[in-house]
Image (cartoon, rainbow, N blue to C red; front, side, top):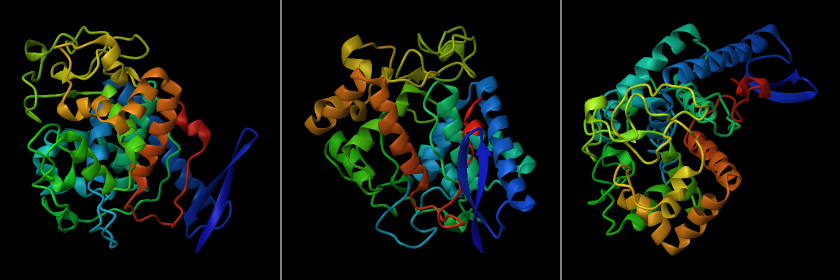
Length: 337
């Protein structure tokens, strides 16, 4: 049985759908309350530990193997929490993500009603919001995969490895001869258009690459291997508070714990050897169709936030098996730290 539960928050009424509940039942209310409590504590944890970037990364890598050409769940991929299992967690592109799973494990233990797939995607949305980004209108109710048999094969998406996640630089696993074609091969497979590709790329305003993970940069863990902008004392938070989490690595932006449109300021600020700019980043302002959106987002943070919300929500939902089919949402108050 699927019914709709409405919970008032001020003058607003927010709809929920909860499997097997009756309207306004204590069981349904408790289910929603557990999600709300989990989100509140997750927001606080991410803010305190400055771990927003890895929360975004683990959620993207769980959902980013979605293939719209495959109908069956979980073979089609998407946000189903298969990333917590071997062999997927040990794909090269997922190096370091065991740390994110470890961060989330106590939350799953404390809030068992929250599925792993929901928890991973909730963490990503919280990370965007905690760092000054928009509150994404997330949907919950995702089913979990149960073991490694649900992990997509490394070459199952027509790429050389990593189950169809994008590469930062050539050679591209999809066989593309240039980065713009590679990005389209990867994201068109998931149903995105050019605007969505550029908007999602803007999340590189958060986070860093590490020599010990992707191996795409020379900078590694700790202050000794940090770049100019990734040392312990660097002011990178959107609220001006101190803290960087773990020092080191190399970032795309100087304020890499702030979610804004600074990623798109690359052409305005000029080349900076202390910041990352991969071929797939360069493609966004060199390809004529991508460039329209790159410049639009550079000029307007609001336009970027609106497009990013749509793309993030889409990435977090495609391929998921929702119970009920429409999923359910959380009250607006749960979106505030």
